[in-house]
Image (spheres, rainbow, N blue to C red):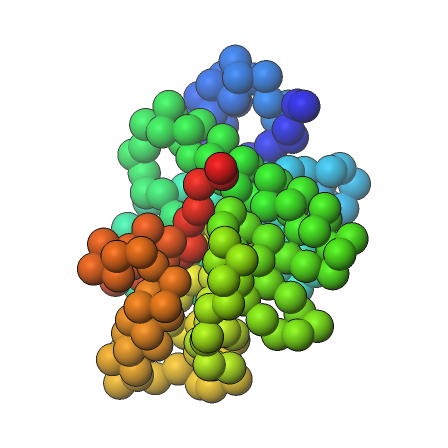
Length: 235
């Protein structure tokens, strides 16, 4: 299958470099010079992944991601010269799946694109298959939305309602980093900086129930200074 990648970037040299590497991997490439043009292309074409800069004319990357996430869940990778932690947190908080800083290694960009496409679309395929039985599945985990029961390898995992909401948020997009604020939204609470320890406790309790070795978590990974993500390996 040939995936279609949209590059939203106003630096022509960067566009040409990325397009060269992507096309060599058999990706079909679309190009937009700003956020408005990117939104128009997404409306007309089936874009599988968006590579987007932050600083662009007409509509910047942050506004584009925010508008896109109102009704579209395609994978998004930010490529930006803005490298401060607050820039990364804002980009991920608005809905980007990954944040990479310039200058970058194009081979690393391609590798991350492949990984994100594999996680996003294989996970969606798994959901579509399992929904025939009303179940959601990712790796060893199966969730029954009718009974509100999470199982690991067939065994029930006794999560509280709060823990279940957090875990399902992470489960909804394997590989995507969710900020603490987004996880608080999942349980219906506002996020305040003083709540860092509270979220750490929630995550610790979830790990104690789902991980084989909570001290060396396999599924819920901490991304220092940003948040958490869920990963799993296909059997």
